[in-house]
Length: 279
Image (tube, rainbow, N blue to C red; front, top):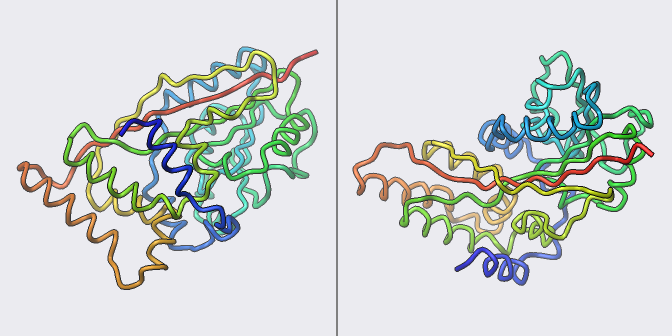
């Protein structure tokens, strides 16, 4: 099945009744998110920072909206004098590291940033979460806080894949099982935000970056437990051990192939970004 066919099927099967305010409030899920979600490559951060420098080279302040426990926030902290990570989930913010001197964490909303002064921000960014935000209002608030020449960057990764046919088939089966538990807004992620346009002239898209990760079965299971569909499925099927069953199947594939507990998964990254006009 092609990627386009998967997206079309997902759009039909995904839920339109998910209460997004309950998606990332469980502390166990947030801890799994902090411990096991993929870390973005330095290449992604550098690509966005280089673009930002074109029109706002000072790199004084960045705001990472929908930051979760800070995967992207920490990556940008290496480049900016200060960065503020903002997320609606108190448990996600609670799981973010608190010992980074130039990082500030806030529980808040992407479309309401009263703690950020107008015209002071070099970069407003969002990784893997913009699909869950009120997008028109979020763009308007980003425009308020950005300096002239500041940058909006939205980025993420698609569903993981494998070069191994057996592993790829299992991951596809798992994805199909989970589809009804994704909120419909998640189709934007799977479609790499093809339907989203940065509200500034000359904005660009970069779909060229790839990311390869070597992980253990336990790490992959931890990553699964961090996703909302697995949490929702497990609540609806309390007598099933969905994650445990997947772990057994992956282990059997690796054992049959004479491999240890580690294997490789692949991600395609995407970035859309634009500069606020200097006027």
